[in-house]
Length: 149
Image (cartoon, rainbow, N blue to C red):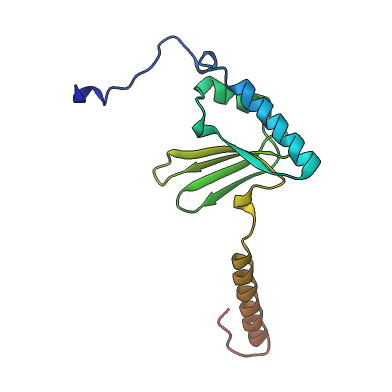
């Protein structure tokens, strides 16, 4: 029986749009509630899509209703992360991939800016140190020194 594990399973004659669990609508109503919280109290929240019983058609419906916004970003750290704003301002779609390009986490974040895009205070400090070092080196070069910029 173990040799059956490698056989892919597909449902013939059914496209993704027909494969709806009915869970897209409750997720969209939750997004509406979370967006109301963001607007009224500034409270951010997220929905872990991978923890929900969603079918391919549910994902398509979510993407269709939320639409595509103006902002997107790609980060590369222990795999790629795609962050995109939806057409609904304050609602972001965040997808994390592992190094094999498999989706390992997917969230709808309701926030002014996804946390993954915020600069950590230690990183800002390191950036300040680096800029100061480069400015010092550039000043030495301008004065005829031998900076390493």
